[in-house]
Length: 260
Image 1 (tube, one colour):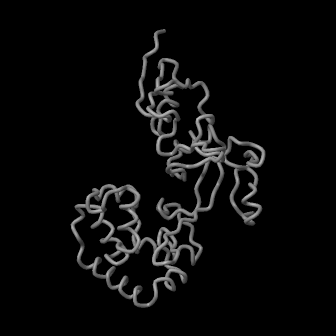
Image 2 (cartoon, rainbow, N blue to C red):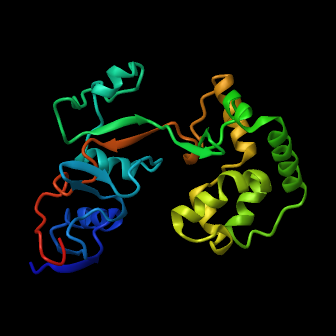
Image 3 (cartoon, rainbow, N blue to C red):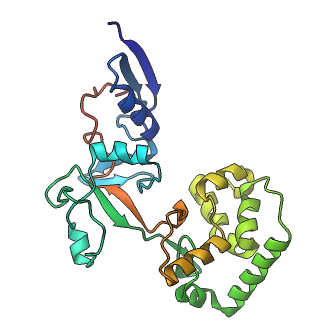
């Protein structure tokens, strides 16, 4: 039977996933073209002088079981504590029954606690923004009052969401937007938020707002379990032990000068 040839442009996460799924069907001959000398796209891990360095996004979390299934087929979740878990006394972390020992196996997906911080005005703040004692102390009474008044104003007078700037202001108020989102977004993406579509915010920060943060605080305070917690508020994620490297889960690929 003659196979149908499928050409995929780009060996990033989407391209490699498409190739992986199509290759399961014997009717397809799959070719992936990649301009760089390594697969992975914005999520690749490079080896620089023996040091593994992430060049982009590596935290992995999905509510889609189809995506989780693909990852587990190639990198099963850790079944025993890693060195860091033991040193940090993270013995209550939920591990995968029968999963590999990360201190022995390399092809394993680690379970990591999320710890993201914003450095603002000489102090560290939780991200996403948390309404805890540290945040209140770091802001100070005056800034906290201004932020509260700004948020109330945004609740009463909504801006038309023609760009990402207005999207954030509607959810956090102009003061908090200026503190935590304006410069950060421009530095990461190279474009000011008012030049980015509001649709971007709906995808990247879906459901996240002061209201959602308050609900999250109450859920934790009263220990209420909620399976619908927004993705941007998750506290743990998966991470491949050696990063997104081409030698894991990519058997059978051919290294060519202009592609894989």
